[in-house]
Image (cartoon, rainbow over all chains, first blue to last red; front, top):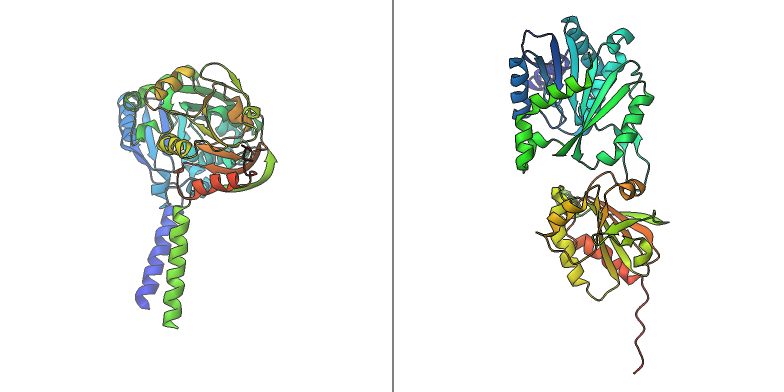
Length: 233
Length: 177
């Protein structure tokens, strides 16, 4: 009985530690003026993502890499991302902006949801200084055959600049205009880019094509190129 | 009491195993299908009217989609199995070019019609959000079942669905000699 009580207390302490304040992230320091907050998808962080973070840091862009499912001890499923405390992520965004660097957030798949909800919690002035790149974001509440898709309420995104990167080879590509409209209706300024000949999560596929393997090695270059093309400063 | 628990446990286990093997078809109240306006690989235009009077399996797929590739052989086996019966399998490639589809078909021989939805207008009209998605239509062109995800089409639940739709059709009238 006593053991059980101690065990429960320990569990409660762990849960508290995991949910208090900012999430645990991995820092790839660099002396440049740009800071990229890399938020991995619900499936967790893969080796090519870490390699890309190292390459970006080597080129002067600091990276804070967050694996949300791992940081919060959550199962690797999309609904886990909806359960992340947006307040924690908002605190993380504020801490990044306090560094004085230009902050860009890069979020993958369903991780777009907590990132956008955190951005909505920011003060308008802070939000307007933030650039958010979403890789094939999933913002659906429901998406059933023969029915209109329904999207999550994300809060006030006015002033936020969002760029969506959508791999062409995805069932979501035909629905990209609706997703962009949804973001715009929340007040975000949106743009998009199609990534040709790639599938969603191409850097972590079980059976990647040769092109996907090559592109997963040059993810850092792709991101820098997208940021330069976009010009969000 | 102990025996009762064991029996209940075994029953639940069997139900779980049966559920795990199910393809997951969703039965819909018979409703008119959305419009289908596509071209086949020869450039001829196709609509659902071309298949009226038959049960239709309309399969939205893409050459890059691994689950779609996995189920294609079983769709072909189903076609062979159902030869001579009023069932039409129609695959419609979502948002791909004719070259992409032809490259795939040069390696994978399929005996059923493959249509193109290069501009994805059919994908959007049918509200397809995942690939593969298959609609089972009755002979009146109404949607009766929907499956999101792959199936082994020539066995189990998928075959049972196809057979149940065929069973609704009137028996063919035998010609007098």
